[in-house]
Length: 238
Figure (tube, rainbow, N blue to C red):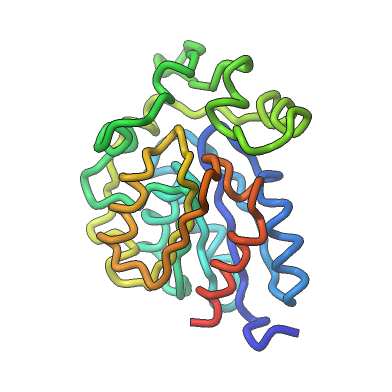
């Protein structure tokens, strides 16, 4: 049993993904005696998604390592500023925003993202638009380093994100990474968030440990669960 067995890892997926994207990571953490749970990110707005995940964290008895993928980094950054039991943050191919920054803004911070040309929209009666990656482009755009069958399932089960969430700025007065130790892991072949942006987030946050996975896609937790699990274990062992 891990000496840190009282720590719970809360995993937060991002846009165009869902809870099963963490399956491999959860399995590997369990081998080390670490309990992990995946929170269902609503993908509606930064503020409301952050509030929901904060409630999930408040419901955990004991310390939490909060892990976010992609847009989930916005949500974990927001949530961590509102709770007292998050002891470490892990960003997995994820945004680590500062107050006032939005996903749309940070995606264009450096050249290289091909996400904008890959998404399609579904108008909602609320006036907002739900965005998904077009099925025929999903494998290449999101998870080029997984097999065809896995990519097909991921594309068919992807969760839509509201355009409001992508354009809403982080409202937390102080982002979680300014006061909470953080770790970063990302792929060099990420087509959603440019590698240069991911490296910038890690440096700005004063990352305690940054792992760059050569040729890994945006879905690095699916294609490289061992590497992601090791990064989380490093955060627990801090």
